[in-house]
Length: 461
Image 1 (tube, rainbow, N blue to C red):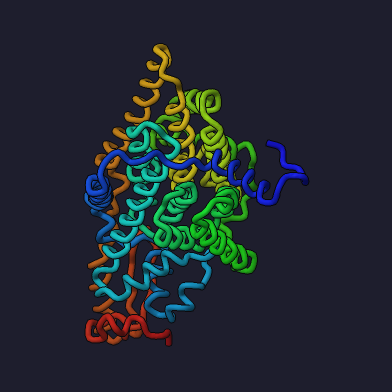
Image 2: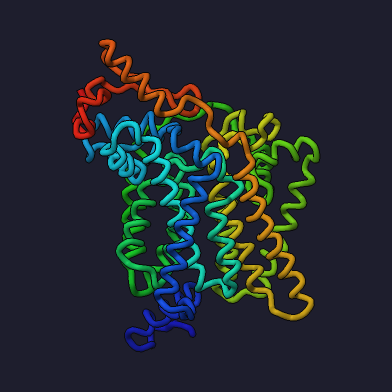
């Protein structure tokens, strides 16, 4: 319908709402009872958390603290006031949710710090998986495809090493969760609004989701997009003035960025980051071509047969995938990101997470959109088999990948060493943690057991 000045009052708003309805469809009614649905979600949540914590690499995280989880978030939670900690930017942007978790972990005995961060990250990642499963009901008819999308949040081949069970790199998963939360029209208002706000004030890349939030504002139940946009404004006000130390001053090579992007998204999505270090030196660019074909066929199907909401979701997901990987590489470019590096794409493995998940959204929508004619059933079955194989292979890689298991100084040994230093009369205790050369120091009044957990929240000297 064409909107004109002669239309009666309210017609323009009705037209906008109708347009938004076409882009943000209502989910189909749930056939199962509430009790059965709740049980299914509870079992899925428990299985996801258990998988993340009980695989070999997951168990290693229970007694090894990773990077900024220790040397920044845990340290600041112990030595700074809670308010200044929550609003203090680091690396050029706010990290409110990781810092909030650190404040809670700081209430635990010092020996539990590593486990506290690992469990918190696993719980939040499992929550993202449930959000994607629930919200995708409005866009995907196939429950198996919805399950695969949710499972990939947990078993993504790019998520079994550097990003596993730490708050430092969780914002890549949170960004994907916020995307689905904004699309979820019948979401529980308060908890989801809190989730998207905390995501917005914890990620520097949330601005890519602003168009989704603006469309969502047209519809009722505006608490979620309003909360998200409030977080975006807060992050946007901080980032221009926050100090950020660049990883390097190497000149960005556009050709290398493009090649690295292709390896880090379509290839990693189907093989995992660790496998690229083996197959790229052996086969050159052939894996890129194969991965592009595997991804392009269902994406094209989504554009051909999808409805308006499906087509837009495919286009937006592919655009987000490409934009996120290119921006991440360009903003953080250094020589180790070149594909000629011996590890190829293992350096900064985290950059692949959100782009791969968005790519799988486009693939799933395409597979779901293919009509059920006989010749097309084979293509649908083949596409779904690929997704199933990716999920199954990811599970196997999580169980077998030795490089992902942390083998440095266990957190318990680090705590014992720091307490020994303080007992010997030193002013601070030194806590070594992962990666190998990371450490931080705490004044001994925060280290010795006689101080107790209550002393950990006091102000810095």
